[in-house]
Structures are given as structure tokens and as C-alpha cells.
Length: 226
Image (cartoon, rainbow, N blue to C red; front, side, top):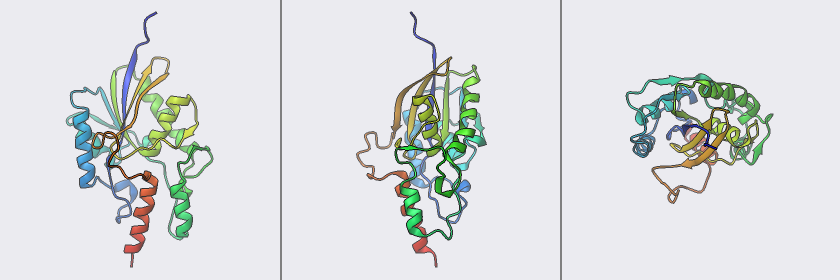
């Protein structure tokens, strides 16, 4: 019996940004370190021809995608934007710390709100149809998707479980690459998760999660405020 034909998806998280710098989260752009991370990813993926390049349309995904696939037609699918947080102003710091550092622990129930905002179920409601739309297009063989931490977790969880079980422990460092193969029936083979070309075995990576890092950024921003 011949093996099923599979297409390949390179699923990336955008490279490093800084939140809490006076810009709305939707508007932040890559830091200098983020641009270096994007260049490292471009080198790792050099020679791969992408038939489709899909982003959420947010500046940080567009900037990363342009570094990876210069000259490619880059699509913007707003349904693939990052999970929406709630309003943190007025929330006690200890409550914010708990929400941030525990946001992606274990299997996260679908009714869990991310920082008081969108639920995991609402994230699935918009990400899964958008992903299915990309997969339904039979014209491509190799696609690059440059998205976000929670969105990537939802896609990886769907690939592994076939459903809406959100596996929060998939760490998605800035500029990381995941590799998925998918057949005509929509069944996935997960080839690689969370590969960081700028630090291949995470030897130099701090042993804290991206959400723990986000908490530190938030704390630093409060200290800077008059």
C-alpha cells in the first residue's frame, strides 16, 4: 500500500516584540532581537519554496513573514490573530500575575478566559475554520503560517487530538518553527515543535515561559509609570 500524499505546513510564531511600551498590542513591531530571530529563521528555511504565506495581518506577523519569504504574496487572515485579552487596568498586580503565569498550564478548559478576555473556546471558534479554509485549498504543497503563541497552541492541539482540547504546555518561543504534514483527509503528522533556529537546543533560553516573561514586562512597565 502506498503512503498517503501529504502537504507540509511550516507554522511559526512571530519573532520577539515588546508589549507595554505605549502601543496597543495589535500595533507592536519587532525588536532588534526579533529581527535577528527572523533572519535566523529565514536562514533555516532557505531554499524552501512556499506556495502560500499566511499571517494574521498584525504587524509583527507581517514583518516576520517578509523576512522569511521576501517577495512572496503575503496573505492576511484576521481570524488568526492572537487571543484577545481583557482590560488589565485596575486589576490587582497579584491577580494579573496569577492570570499571566497560569494562563497555559496543562489542558486549558474551553471556557477559560485569557486575562479576562476571549475564551479558549472562542479562540477555537475562529481559528479552526480559518485553518480548515487553508487546508481546503488544494493548490498548494508547502505553506508558511506566521501566527501567534496561543493560536499555534490551538493548531498544534488540533493536530494532535483532532478536536478542541487545548494543550497549553506547548511553549512557543518568539520566532520558533513547528513542522506539520497533513493528508487529504485532514490527518496530521507532527514533525517538529518549537524549534528556535537562533538557539537550536534552547541552551541559552531562560527557563521561564513566554507568559512568565510577559508578566515581567508588565511589572517593569508599572515600575516605569509615574
